[in-house]
Length: 294
Length: 182
View 1 (tube, chains in turn purple, cyan):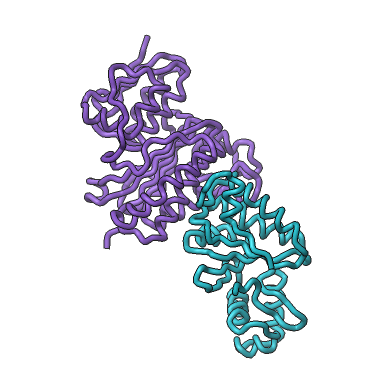
View 2 (view 1 turned 90 degrees about the vertical axis):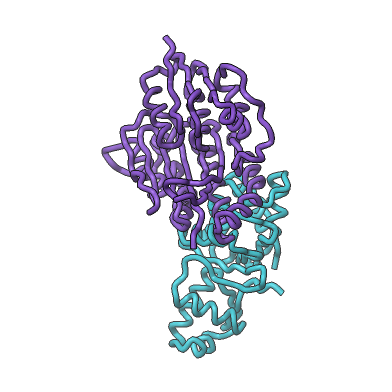
């Protein structure tokens, strides 16, 4: 029997959990239909996580794209369908990808597999990021360098630790509720690799504790800068990301396995820790840097 | 004195016209090239690493290039070369400071406008004495002690510590800034 997984109308990092809750009941080789027909909003996290989701399945899932032509066109513009074609059996015609002029995306959905991909992304995004962060988000120029560093380190986690390729997308949009209409730049980096627990499992720097699960592994890596590598200089990337996010009053969330930790700013009311979530391989990271107000 | 253009090393080792020093793989490749160049010079040489053509550097590269080179010199002991980091901007400084503090290292950086700064893990006394020597030029411990209004014996210990960490050079009884770029 084929299971239908319903994509919520608004797909973001939190509502994606509804997708995973439904998927948790399905063995990886079960046939599933991912029904996004009624999805009217998808964040960079939502779209990259949908691609990641398909990577976790041994049987190619079927995708029903948004019925609304505007939404479907938008997904095409940001490169979703171009990548989804290899991962999903897409039912029905979808628009072709065109130049992403009006998508609001600083960087359309981009596969990250090797070190060179990180270089390419950094070289591509730097000037545009500088312009948007200084002119639209009113951040000082120092923040733009930190932004590119943050992006680089976030992508390197895939290259160094995931064991398989992942996805990156960067978008600027208005946060109507949380930030009262302020702009924010959002980085989403998702992979379906080994995840933090397995990555750290054999590390000599792993915390000595009776309890070893996704939550402990996430806290060790994200909060305490523990890396699977024994060298003292490792693990600085996530620590640097956390510092950058804190400095510019941003938000960081990292999900891996069955847990999710978040560095939550004053403007948000997310939980710092979520446990016992539906299992999802790899690591999924989201960074939000808000517009600065006087 | 020897000068290494880190931008040129990056382009050569990556085989691409990259201007940003990012990813640990690239950092390790760049460091290996620099190590080969340093190995070819006489011990005690001041090597200037010129970052003028590096737009941005991430934490991983700061660790691979800056910290690992300094740690290697520390391991090699007294006869090793000294490193000075030239052409540093705000786009490099954050990552450099973070990794230096993490490893308990200190380094001398020269900004594009010619200003120099001691960066990383240093005590207040070390910073004060280093700034004094940098401002006045070669000086004996007694002269520095007068300038900073401290006991000469105490200042001598600090000067010696800065010399051992390759943050100053020593010529007989005088201590001088390293890698002053004309």
